[in-house]
Length: 76
Image (cartoon, rainbow, N blue to C red):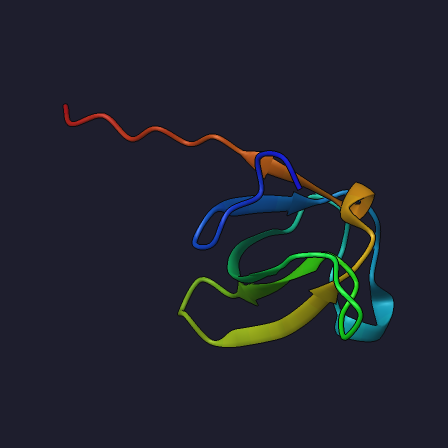
C-alpha cells in the first residue's frame, strides 16, 4: 500500500460505472486497511462533486485501480 495514506488524494485508473465513476476521477482516502483475516488490504475512497456532494464511497481492494497523487499547493 505504498503511497496510499489516510486523507491522501488518489486518482481512479479504471472506470467504475456501477458507482458512476470514470478513469481519472479524483478522491480522498478516508480509511486504509492492512491485509488481515477479516478484510483484504485496501482502502475506502470518497469521491465528491464540485459542490462537495458525495458521489460515491468506493471500497478499493485491488490497489492497482488507484494511483496516489502528490499535490502541493503553493501560495502566490
